[in-house]
Length: 186
Image (cartoon, rainbow, N blue to C red; front, side, top):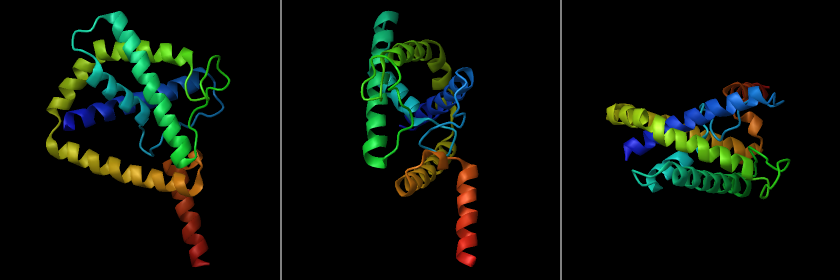
C-alpha cells in the first residue's frame, strides 16, 4: 500500500511541474500554481495515474493504453473538479473557453493530451517510479504521510474558510498568520 502512496506523490509532483511548464509556455497571467495543497503537488495527477496503473493490464498495447489513459484521467479530472466545486466551493481550472468542454471541468483537447501523457508515463516513467517506490524506507513513507495529511488539513481549512485558491501558497499563509497575530495584539 505504501508503494501506491509513493506513486501518488511522485505523479502529483510531476503534475505540479507540468502545470508550471504549461503556465509559462502559454504565458498565463496566473503563474502561481493552482493545486489543492500547499506542497508542490497536484493531486489530480497522482489520483489519475494511480487509478490508471491499477486498471491497466500489465501488457496492454499502446492504442488501448492511450484510450484507457485518456478516459481514466479525464474521468478523474471531472470528479476531482466536481469535488472542489461542490464541497470546497472553488475551481482550480476552467475549460469553458475550450471547444467541447463539459461544464468547464473537462474538454476533448486535454483528454487527448492526458491519453498521450499517461501512456508515456506508464511505458517509460513507471519502471523508474516503481523502483524508487520499492526502495523507499518505511520511516520515510510514514513521514511523507504525516506531512501530506497536515497539508491536506491546512489546505482544506483555508479553502473552506476563504474559498480563495490564491491563499494556497506558503507566502500567503504566512502573510495571513502575521495579519491575524497583529490584529489580535492590537
